[in-house]
Length: 270
Image: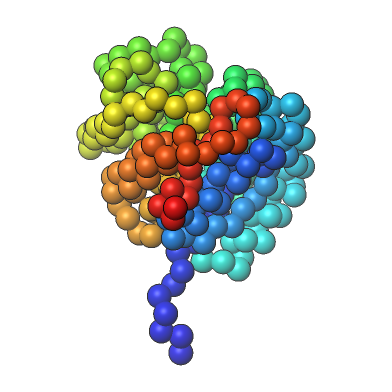
């Protein structure tokens, strides 16, 4: 009998970033850096670099489902994370699949707009995301722009507004909401983990770097990695915040591309 402990496994369901800084590529790097085996379902292909997104090719929804089924039927997946889902058809396909695995923790990163400003989710798909996927989520991780888009409200500009919007998103059916304050302007980057039992505040000094490509993907994947290792949600978020802070702090060691470069996913190993 094999006495070795079960290897923690996480599944990312997201788009491919040909430039390597975000999407599936960032997710798998994050899983590896945190000691979790990563597997993937690709929802779309992007022609993308540090300057922006030049093209998007969405995968047929039925093939997205086939990839999920292939992974889940064989591997003991301990957590699932979704990123770029591109359109309403893919969202519905993913939701139909994930309903079969209600006990697997699920991190929903509502990817709508890239760091470069390019749209990564069709506007008509937001309603599907709210109706079909959000109620399945262990935690949803919107930044301030995504939270405003989900609620069709103006951008939150202070912690009080972040709290109010997070509570409204929670009322839509998610078990927890991580309101990310990275796009705010205070000296501290503050995130709020909002659940039915209260709010936990996570703050870290705001770092000056242009290498922020893939930060949202990286944070959500790091949370999924923690959940795959059986951490509580609060501990998984803390581990993820600490990891991202280190990856951002080391990002200026990298010289990649001419635009917004990636964070340094493997800073611990250099």
